[in-house]
Image (cartoon, rainbow, N blue to C red; front, side):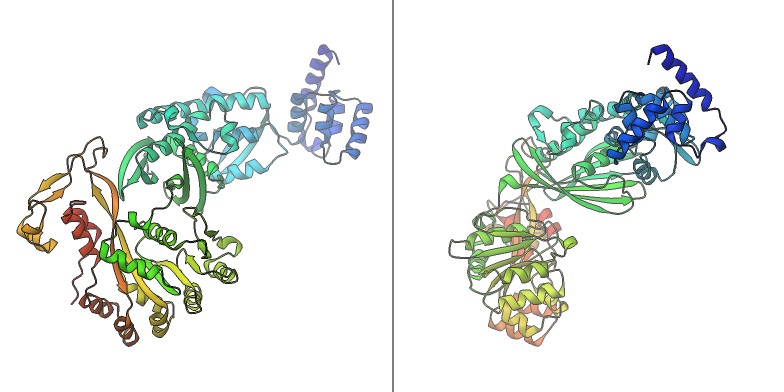
Length: 592
């Protein structure tokens, strides 16, 4: 068709569009194109015949494929058929950039959509495929409002997306500069396809997320907290167990930041009403990092916590755990028994899993069959078969444990005893010739016994099955470069439980002013403190007589058990940590 005829046909299409909507709403696309003289009857019949063969292809797509009409003509005809406005150009300079705050640029580019205006009741969105309503459903959820659709060409929509998102990109680049991290040296690799296909406008927010991950790994942070508030977003890192503020971001960045993190965590970016959990595997400066992702909706936006685990570091050996010699000897005896339950207790982040892994490695030999069920699998252990629990598909600890028992195990590790069913199977397993390792969320060793009773485990079963319980905490280690000697007062000596002559040069050490080695924190790294309750015959008799945790603990102390506070004070005397840190991380053991 000659260019003059095509222009004439476009004019005729515009004239047809002025016909009453009431008359044309029932008309099909083919008739509209014929009336506009863009398609002849013969061409229409030919396309309809081909559509019978290609049943999944739309008529308009066939006509474009046959070069009978172009994409713009098809879109105008569709807009006319659906009674939608068609825009040859979009007012991208007048679009409020806050309209796209909650929408990742990848979503707009993948679906060829862009919001262009908002009123009290609706957001107007330009689309290049008015027949694809699914992206509009997602936008309705993301923006929590009604959507009004208009039509424009793909090229115009892409140009508008680029212009609108430029401003957010400027903010991202500024935030990245504040991080003060060399991205080339950091070498962050996120194995997701959208990173490889990212356009220039997406790169600032990607670089910001990568920069946060790189800085967290560099600072040896265990967690990244992204916390939205009314006017800003606060990013904090947990380093050596303590949170520190890393940076403050403009609120405008929050939704793009959270969307990017949800994309690489394979979460639903359109869902903002319920909590979501995911995992990310990344490589930073040659290190394999496993990231556990938690997204929680709040009144100010989605709060994100990412827990970082350096898989390349591997599990520690038992002799690297810093356990006092007396306790280490007893623990070694327990973990080398042929059957029974060995428990590790403590709150989240207290080193329970690290201690269990070290204990497994200590007993792992070619003639022993070891199986674990964990959530998540934090370290890969050579010679150990590890199972990832997945409650969503029915693979709970209890179900996994039943299957493990059919695999002829010698040693079983259960990531955590969370419910009555798991506790009962664990006890039965230990009483039928298996050595079982597991964890409980309790504050000390004695309350682990009462916790098992809460799971309806009978006292006689506990006394028969449980070999011992280790409680653990992590205290911050004083920086060896800047720690300062301190002469303790009489009150501090009483807390330590020693006289001055028992101290190194009559002094202890406290937090220094900070230096480059500890990043001005005064502390660098953490070490464990431990409390071990061994269930010997005397303790078993007491458990059979009482269910009171305080009575059990009093009896253990009378038999010479060293508490978490005792272990922490020993670390203070040795100069490894400060008295303030030891007091803060352990509670007093005074029992009325």
